[in-house]
Image 1: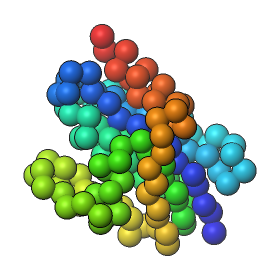
Image 2: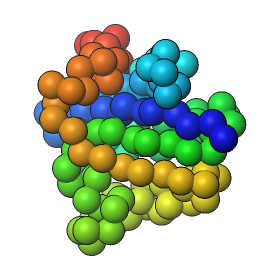
Image 3: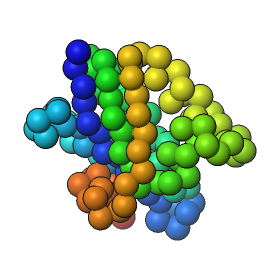
Image 4: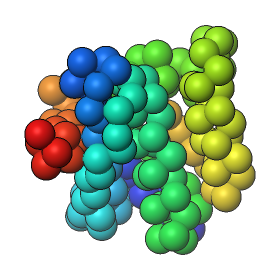
Length: 134
């Protein structure tokens, strides 16, 4: 069993606007396994948040994780992924489906909302991605 702890963040300047994602993956001991940031073009904050989760799960799958705990500061995305809110936006529904399909690669996946100040490294990575294109 290989469990990974993941922090993700996505953001867009202008909403919609130039957007980036940040992903931090650690092992259970808190050692950094992967840090990743990427510019994703013009999109909304919520689209960027979903893109970060998708990216993180793809990396975790490649790292052969069996369990993942994902922490993000988007309450909307966490509540949608946990089935507490319906996904009404068609664009988000497509990304929700991608996350749902990626979940099948793992024995267990959890999504937890955390305060922004507890997600600083992922936030920094997302901002670095946006900064590269300004």
